[in-house]
Image (cartoon, rainbow over all chains, first blue to last red; front, top):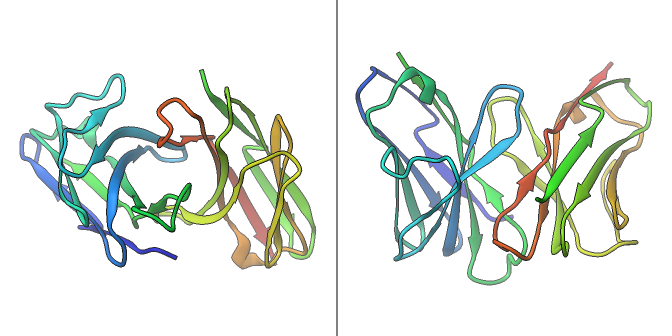
Length: 117
Length: 111
């Protein structure tokens, strides 16, 4: 199956700093990438949908100025958590859908665990 | 509003003890129902996509089935390595690219 890679897999930062998480599709071109957030023992909550070359679409209740998403190429999307606070600590997971051949299937990255002190 | 409900929330089985996980959904115009496996601290791993009622798919000890209101993930003679959280998600026409996930079923297989 398709491979989606996230980096870093875990990060610890101080409150008030910004953190960038990268999501790459390694063996296919992804026109659309999705960013999810997952709290312990809970399911995945969609934060935003990013399309290559255009602005991301954020879900209701997600602050777009807080969670900056950039999808500058067909293989890379980034999520930047700006001025992070302890309540932003969570497991962030990206997923990607390819141009063709992967219709209907979303492939997920390994996730990035953010801890804000 | 599209909703996905999975049951049970948690399930403990003995090795070799077959069972089924349930995923009930309400969505206007289902485009696809997805099953994923998630291990602790990892991203979801794709298992199956089902598109229409009556469809079935199998992979090793897992078999997924779909009706108009629910999907079942049957696990036959499970092994300890099948322990994981199993997630169900639906894709609807509106916002067609998005998946709506259920809460998951935490499956534990005891040796």
